[in-house]
Length: 169
Image (cartoon, rainbow, N blue to C red):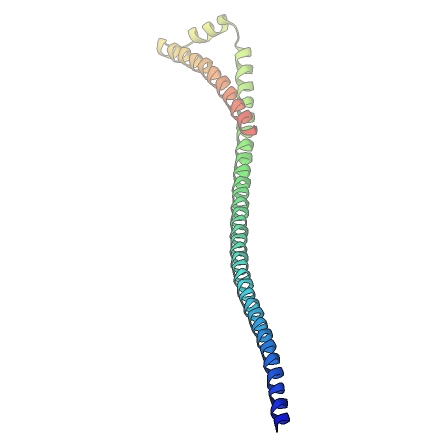
C-alpha cells in the first residue's frame, strides 16, 4: 500500500508538475491569445479608420467629379451662347455691308450730279433761272441741302466702315 501510496503521490507530484507546466503554458497561451485579440481589435480600428478615410476620399472625389461636370455643362452653355452672339454679329455685319453698298451707290449718284453741275457759275445760273425770288431761294436751299447731304453721307459711310471693322474684330 505504501508502494501504491508512494506511486500515487509520485503520479500526483508529476501531474502537479505537469499541471504547473501546463498551467504556465496555458497562461502564456491565454496571454498570447489576449495580445492577439488586442492586436486584432487595433487592426480592425485602423481598418475602420482607413475605410472611413477611404469613404471620405471617395466622397471628395465624387464631389470633384460633380463640380467638373457642372463646369463642363456651364462652359458648353457659354459656348452655345457665344455661338448665338457670333451669328447675330455676323448678321449685323452683313446688314451693315448691304447698307454701306446702298450708301455708296447713292453717293455715286450724288457725285455724278455734282460733277454735272460742278461749276459755281452753273449753280448761280440754276438759282437765278428761277421764275421768282421765292423759287430762286428754294433752289439755293436745295443746292445747299444737296451739299450738306453729300457731306453727311460721306461721314455716314466712314462711320459704317468703322463699325464694320469693329464688328469684324
